[in-house]
Length: 201
Image 1 (cartoon, rainbow, N blue to C red):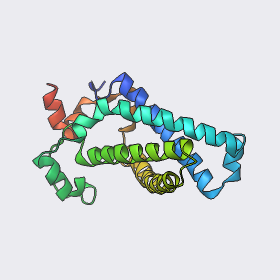
Image 2: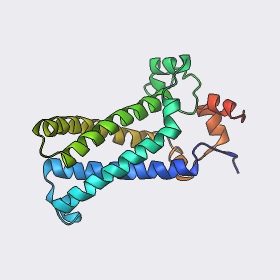
Image 3: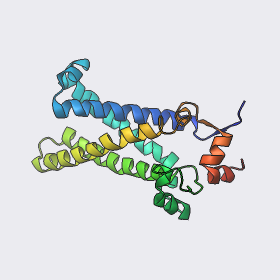
């Protein structure tokens, strides 16, 4: 049996599922509001109750997003020469002939994705609270709807790409979100700098 190494802790896995689940449900209900999808509203017992669900899911999402910072933010803000080179070869996604530099625990694409989610997540949460709690302020409502819709577009594009890259595009990656483990030999190839840092080389 292949030797395994832990890449994600139990609380990180749980929080990732909470973040992902709330985000996907928010996107679905958001689409339903935007395009007035009656069949989605009926699943929640009507648009009024779906609006309540949407609002409180937003609370769950932003709390989960803030908690995720203890796991990812430090790494997401650190870049080195290998990360720059990774961008130059597009991470090897466009050609298998290029040499991809050694990576740490996360590649720069993952780091930028996380930062985009943090920025867009905070923007969509603040604007959502504005729409929810400050209905009497016309200026706040107009600005909040604009910010909310722009951030929503970012999520609609980024989240499906993230799901694809974490499943079909990189077989075996999904198990990290399930049990937090990755085969040591795979980790040595994909995250050699991280493996060296944790003394597994």
